[in-house]
Amino acid sequence: MVIDVATISQVMLEQLCFFSTRYLKLKSALTPFHYTLSRVAYDTGVPPVRAMALEFPSDDSLLVNGTGSAMQFMVGGDLLVAPQYRPLGNGGDARDGIYLPANPGTQFDPY
Image (cartoon, helix red, strand yellow):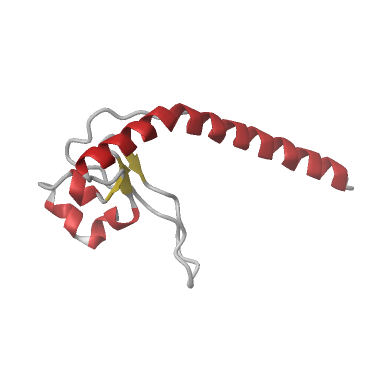
């Protein structure tokens, strides 16, 4: 089987364009949300990017590192960010779960 390098490059370019367009649209959709968070931070001093314990102070399990909440955070009070990661060094498994507070509110998938 012969693989044409030009074809591989074209496929990779198409994938790059697809994902770049997708995330730029998501960024544009979230711009008003970020402006609002910036104004709230200016008025109140509460940072736009917050530890989960700041947003859910009554959830004691957030203070325990074993829940996995140390690797996720809130953007405002409405957006939970839980990046996919792989531990450095030993090449361990990827993240195996996301901690959701007892009452996370409305959930949505932007895709």
